[in-house]
Image (tube, rainbow, N blue to C red; front, side, top):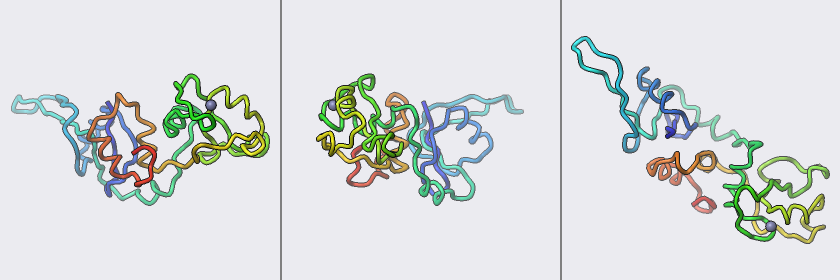
Length: 188
Ligand SMILES: [Zn+2]
């Protein structure tokens, strides 16, 4: 399980481990929390013999200056690993429209790298091996393979959904992140 960390103004910052969340609670750095508790940890014994307890919520906001401006100005990283890219494109090949498993998809540069195309969110799409080979070092126009969808830069909220493995995300976290999506987001 992961905990969604927010800055004081409620902008999602990152996924953190349960241990990291527990240390924020121990340091009394949690300003507020959202969602149904994920887990309870027992701490050391107090003087009266009772044990301290730390209950961890799925979403926590941390005290301190707001970093919302910085967070919203930054572009989510396009990692070398393709998981986020394939998830953004819902595992649909941009050229034939087929739905594939991640093992059968490749990162395809719309403007080929050899032609000066950048390795950025807006120049990469998910493509099946067959389409990727067919297109080769051509542009979509040259290859007569028009894009079926337009590549885009994920928002901060989308990026956190893309980062998370489905089994690590609880309903409260998904609901929170979905609330931040624009109405035309493909992750809705
Ligand atoms: Zn294809």
